[in-house]
Image 1 (tube, rainbow, N blue to C red):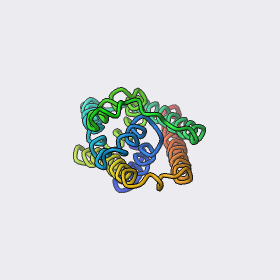
Image 2: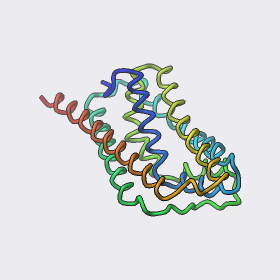
Image 3: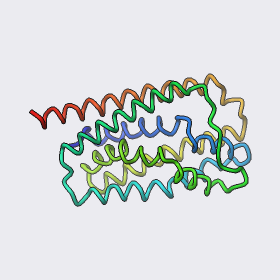
Image 4: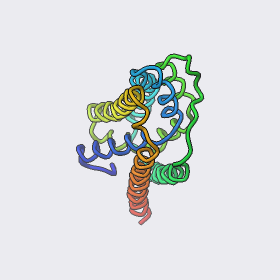
Length: 213
């Protein structure tokens, strides 16, 4: 049973969740800022490197789940955990909104490789896809392989668009990336994460209550 039945509504939620995730400070965000000071196309290359890890993972989860009818109890559990994780990420982002991420990747490394390495070495990225991401894939599965493929493409395009635009803007002039702009974006992301986290949690809880009664 999907938490969201309408494909357009589902895609809209994917865009909001994806953009909120990509806008939050993290290793990939930090390395993009670092690389962008030297190459205006760094964001696009980093997003491509990110996709090298993310696309296989998305399709792996989809095809692992495809042969099985996932019990409502499992879907409810994933929704509950994913909802809690999203709320936790939102709260942590709010608490750390004034902290600056430091890039761990050497500036001498290629941007494409930086995207691959930073994504693959990020345990939080894997955890996200095993919880929140899996909940989204369970919804996408309701619309078949084509619907899932559109979901995967839209999710990655959100990453690609943001990192490309951000890197180009930073390369041209870092003065536009002010603390005020950063704070405003962070607060918007916090609201989206907490809101969707509460929605996922509430939907999964309602499903769990239905199973138990």
